[in-house]
Image (tube, rainbow, N blue to C red; front, top):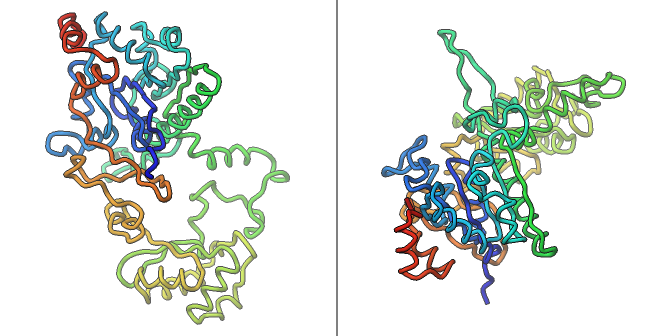
Amino acid sequence: MSQPAPLEGLRIVEASALGPAAITMPLVDLGAEVIKVEPPQGDYIRKMTWPIVEGVSLMHLHINRGKKSIALDLRNDAGVETFRALADTADVVVEAMRPGGLARRGLGFDDLVATNPKIVFCTISGYGMTGPYKDYPSHGIAYDTWAGIVNVAEDDEGFSYLTEHASIGIHAGPLFGALGILAAVLRARSTGKGSHLEIAQSDAAAAMDWYRSETWRAYERPESEVTGNEADGFERRAPGTAGMREGVRYQVYETSDDRHVLFMASEQAFWKNFCQAVDRMDLFERWPGSTVADHARGNRELQRQLKEIFASKSAAEWLELGGRANTPIAPVNTPKTLLDDPQFQDRFPLYPADELGADQLPTPLKFLDETLPRPTRAPTVGEHGEQVLAGVLGWSGDDIAHARARGAFG
């Protein structure tokens, strides 16, 4: 007998604009019902950023997949009444825009909890509901520059530019928010009491990069209290991956097929396994290293020898050797080549473009011996309006026509 989807029966009413709507996407993928409330003109995410796939942005196709859309004019009493009626049936209301927008229309947490005591109300925004930046307009990269994640470079003409990087805040913020929503729903179902929570995408970016910022703070303490690794003679290295530049046994190497692999034999046991596998025990005998956390930092003589060794085989051959000999060697992919990686293809069978408008990655979560629901294509503006009103609120055709005459839908 098949299981229901993990979040089947969870209803979320979402008032969203642009990227913060990603907060409910992982919940949709697990079976939640998400009703996206849009203004009559629609969320302009459909035209935002590149690529545009057959007239619609990939961003909209991805983060709004599986959702239902209803267009409501929340400047209109009938539109507000309709939103409130939907919220009364919901477990969660998400405000994915600047904080306070719903409260100004009489649809904030204090308004909704009066008629739905178990409601979970979550706001996701750029800088959050407090602090000196709370009212500043911003876009997603701002949260990464604020958190110290993005390096600034300068071109040949002396102009500054942002280096390529993986966006953190716009992805981590929604994930933290989704986790908070589920925690609050669990509590509401056991206690009968709702919650008002918020998440800032800037905060989430900083939280994801805690290792570097906390390392810098730790280094403010005297060296008698905070040192580096024993393998480095306790010398303090730069935080995070910046401290790996001079690494040798933990470093990238070019292969015979003009690719690169990441060699990670910082543990002595892995280093010995590698030397045995390539018939170079002389390297281990000369430089056995410490038991753990030893990158052979700055050992250029060893690095030159490893460079020659890795240039003798293809990337695929090195991966096979690493698995066989129990020494960690990983591929170095790009966002373009990743989709061709056999591990990726085994774990991430793409949702095809003919289903969702563009090839898309599924949720990385897997429930063993279960098949999760496949999301539907991201909606057009108001596509599910009548379906939502009839199915959720039980409205008749006359009820819908009356609301339309009052201007509820713009």
